Length: 136
Image (cartoon, helix red, strand yellow):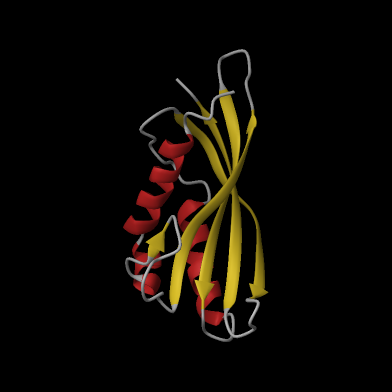
């Protein structure tokens, strides 16, 4: 197994989301890999945690990445967050992304959890994608 493709995969996902008009029409440039500092936008996307497991075969090193992407809003109601989540899912599911290192075999939507924030006012939707990669 190699974890070496992880940064390349995250970068390709980020680039796909920032290039997708369907996503940027809803959140603008508010797509992050860490909590935004300063004034937090009322609606944003956070490329979050991942879990990776080995997926080697006879042809070489590989891994399956369980990538989480969160849509976060401080607005009550799920409508805006669900619109962004749908745009992200449409953009990434079965996407043919070029990686700076390694090769993407597949990127598929796995599941999502929509929930209220701890304070109850905002909403968060965490989408999970499975990505199978091979390392060169």
